[in-house]
Image (cartoon, rainbow, N blue to C red; front, side, top):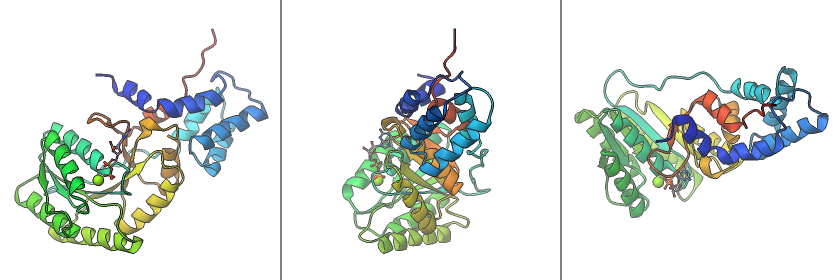
Length: 299
Ligand SMILES: Nc1nc2c(ncn2[C@@H]2O[C@H](COP(=O)(O)OP(=O)(O)O)[C@@H](O)[C@H]2O)c(=O)[nH]1
Ligand SMILES: [Mg+2]
């Protein structure tokens, strides 16, 4: 199997190529005004956002050394040191997974369940996206592959009731991890807000301190709309961390930097493909290194 760095580099290759086209050789320390402008444009096109791109370039310009290294340092300084995941002292770790439909929640839950199961943990998943029977079946397939267990009801069942049952069963049967899948689209914003708030409430009733984490899944290719999504879900669901998916399919990996800069939320994992192995723990150094082109070495 490819190494962590190889997989990450492959996953982020489109973002890196986008930036590489614009970045002159890394060993050059003196850039013209126009070259700096081009770098800034490349960052904007990679979805770093206009304001952040200009800040990154300003700080890189102040630094000594090659432009790629300087940019690397200014990107890295945005990303906070690791914050530990809030594992509880007793009872299962209860994780609520939220986000707009189609961002990759169900797939990511399959990947997470696999990861935790591989660590020797007993995993129970709750199918609280009850809108479509197909969504429940899709989750069931992932959960089975992961070697985890599923709590499901008929489609149309109350999502909060499913979430409550799942946490209760997780407690009663000594599971280590409980993951709740949720819906990301209902008729109205108000409906979504009420539903997620209710899921949160009943989960807290079932197990004190739960949910221990609320991870929002964001599609890395959505562009600036990702900002609005995180803003909204943080308010409604109390997002505590982010998972950015589909970074393999986009040249817009800069959105990760912008989200962190904007919300200060830890990025827990990134999705770089559709298979079980394509979920990687977020490593700030590795991420920045994979995003930027290799410095050009002068012979
Ligand atoms: N290329 C790629 N596709 C992904 C990734 N994560 C999820 N997907 C795809 O995105 C689509 C929607 O995923 P799904 O889990 O159903 O999203 P949900 O509606 O949020 O539950 C599916 O076709 C997944 O295979 C990823 O990291 N990379
Ligand atoms: Mg889903």
